Amino acid sequence: QVQLVESGGGLVQSGGSLRLSCAASGSIFSINTMGWYRQAPGKQRELVAAITNGGSTNYADSVKGRFTISRDNAKNTVYLQMNSLKPEDTRVYYCKAGWGPGWYGDYWGQGTQVTVSS
Image (cartoon, rainbow, N blue to C red; front, side, top):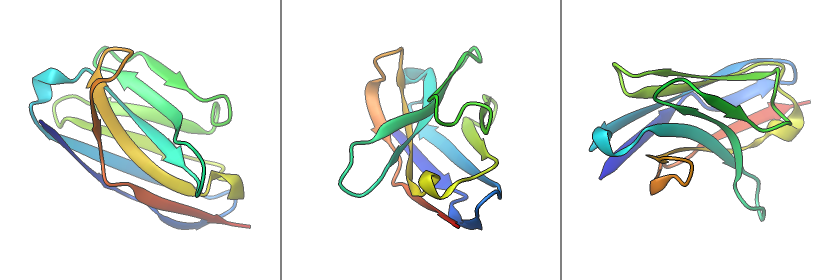
């Protein structure tokens, strides 16, 4: 099992920045991909960004150029730096971890609220 603990959400004005952190513990050897999803009320979760152990990244088109995902393998922690935030970025953000493009293992954090005021 892998446990994911998120931190860093909150309230910010439009145009502001926030950084989310997600620390993994437990069976770390069973994951090689970590990332962030987000979900609005009544909507499906959508991928925001993902990063592999090797540093390969993938972003949703809606956040390219504004969000940056990074990873500290020594600390088993993934970060999401969010700049130029917009009200439509208001979601609950979830950390996810797994193995390979299929996210085998399918581990989730508890979620952290990000609210962007206009």
